[in-house]
Length: 425
Image (tube, rainbow, N blue to C red; front, top):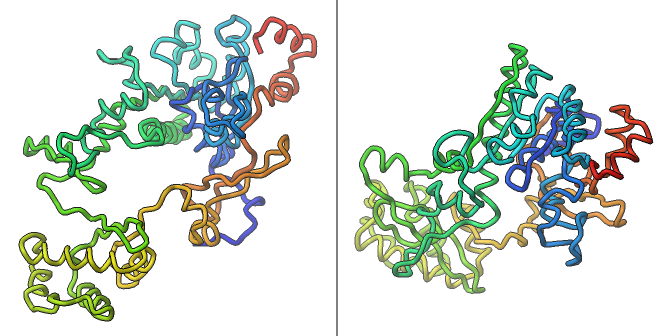
C-alpha cells in the first residue's frame, strides 16, 4: 500500500490525547509509539536528564545529553520538561499537569511514586479520568515485585532465552536477542493496555491503573514452549537460526557463492506446484539430478519431512544455493513462491528499495540545531486516514520548559528563575 495523499494535512489517530511520560529506558518506547501516532507526549525528566540521554552510542562519539542515538530514536515527536518531582514544588507542578492529561506513563519501582504522594490513588483524585500505566519488570504485586532486573534478566526469566541458541555447538548456553527486545515487548503490551483503558474511559468516563509486567509480557510470547509444557510436559530444544522444536530439524541456512547466508525455510515445498517449479528451476542449471523421481512427488503429497529422500534433497539444495549469488537464490525462490530470503545485517536494509522507495520506511528527520537530517526507522503500520508521522526529532533537554511551564501553565518569569535556582527544573 502506498499512501499518496498529503499526510501533513490529515489528522492523526491519537492527536486528541495528552500524555505525561515519566518512564526511563524500560518504558520510553511506549511514549514514542503514542507520540508517533499523534498524541501530545511530554517527557518529564530530572534536571540532569533522562537516563537514556547518558547511554551511547552518541552522535560523533561525543557524550552529551543531547547526543544519545538511543534517546533520539525512542523520543521522536515528544516534548521535554525538566522537573524534580522529588521536591514539593516539583510534585505540585506535576499534579497541575495531571489535571489536563489523559494518560500518565511511568516505569519507577513499585511504591516509589506513592512515596512521593504521586501514586495512582492520589492522582486519580485530581483527575478521575486519568489512565495511568505502570511498566515494571515484575508488576506491582507478588514476591518478585521488588527484584532488580535489566532487559537481559527479563529475557532470561521470561523464558525467551531458553528457546534461543545454537544446536550445532555442544552444551551451548541460551542466547538473548539484541536490541532490548524484552523492553520493547513490554512496551507493546503497555500501549495495548493503555489504549484499551482509554477506550473504556471514553465509554464510562472512568480512568484506571494499568499494571504491566515485562516478565509476564515475555512469558506469554514464547511461541510453542508454553503450550508444549502445559499439555505434554515437553520442552522444545533450541535450534540455530530457526524455530525451537520438540524434535531436531535440519538447518535452513545455506552459504551462497558470494559468501552470504540464505534462509531456505520452505524445504521441501508444501505443494506439488511449488515442487515442480523448484525442480524445473534447478534443472535449468543442470542441478536437479535425482529429484525427478516420482518418490519425491509422493513425499510432497504425503507431507513427509524426514528420511533418506529428505536428506538427499537438502544436499542438492545446499549445492544449488552454493553455486549462485545469494540474491539470485532469494529472488528466484520467491518467484516460485518459496519462503527463501537473504540473511541481512540491519544496515543492509537501508538500501532496500521496498523499504526506501515504495514504503517510505526511512524518513529523514531534521535536527535544526545540527543543520542536518538523518534517516530514522519509520512506521510500524501505515494508516490510510490517520497517518503515522514524524513531526519532530527528540527534544533537547528541557527544550519545552518555557512554553509548557510558563506560557501554558502560567508560571511567571520570576517563578521560572526561582525554579531554576533551586534546581527544581
